[in-house]
Image (cartoon, rainbow, N blue to C red; front, side, top):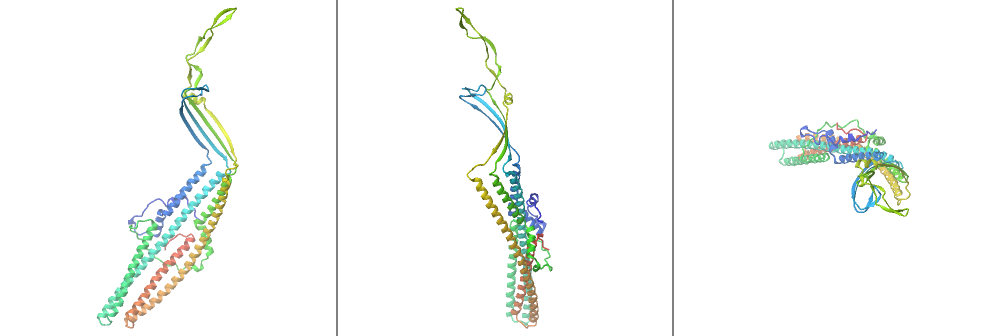
Length: 482
């Protein structure tokens, strides 16, 4: 069962120490892998994608909550305008202020919200698995670079031994020449052999530097940083038999251990939900909304609160009573205006509420929804094809890794036999040379044959080990060098 990796687990790859102390000594493979996971640009980018997916997931889940908005406005009106108190036109400036709060919640929209929430959850899981796949890939690359350094260092040690042996043989030859046992010309062959061996040391040392540089690049380390690795006791497992490995069994196991496989299945589910979301846009939607509002105006007056109210007689007028003119005056109630309604009182008196239930039915919108549905369907088909391609690539990688392991084992065994034969030939040449039965050219030829056989054995050994580790990787085992 593929081990799930959460955002919290992934973030531990990106925190902590950014560099090991140089005083901590040589790095183990585990330290190199851990450091690469923390500092790899690819892994960091994958972690950013995880964080983005988490944000999108939160945004999708928040769609279930209602939306609430507040509004406040204030201003002056000049010229001819309507007095809010009398609803009549006046030619004066009016100051107004209004406040409102509105909100709404979607009751139904073709199940788009539920599908979006499910899609966000699935996309987050897929992003987590992508980050795990990126971490696995960098781990395998680091393991390969680590083994290449061990290979280069062993080749360097072998080349240095060969230089020491050639130097010793040259010194021995000089003694024999001085004693008159060998001709002077024999010395030239050993001098040439020593030069070749010294050149091999230089090439091997350069190979070590290059492989360290490659490892530093994987670790995102500055090339000038001093770095050495722990050299474990390398043993080739004798119980490993690549010929007995069942390809289908490894592939079946890899389907459950490789995160990109489950990520592909999740993306297929996400594409299916994308199609459902597109279909939801052609369905009716139901929304509940409401608002609270109030306002204030400096021209809003209380007609029940006159200013300086008094009774006065009006303008006299004459009426004829019994053919006699009579002056008549009626009492009138007059005032100097009305009191302005205070700000807080206006807010209370003008407070209003509203609630709405709206139904929206898509009828025609330039064929946009139909086009989106077709796009979603094609995208789902492409996702399914891509998922099949990922599985096919995995199967090909598994088949190739097992075939490489089988070929590497045969090469390693052949190299062992070659070293045994070359060693026997060299031992025989050494005895014959000591007896003067062969010349220096034949002796150096036997030496070179043995040296090449040892170099080939070293290369075959590490290639075989790496191929076995790749098979272990597909079996979901931790990458270790014992």
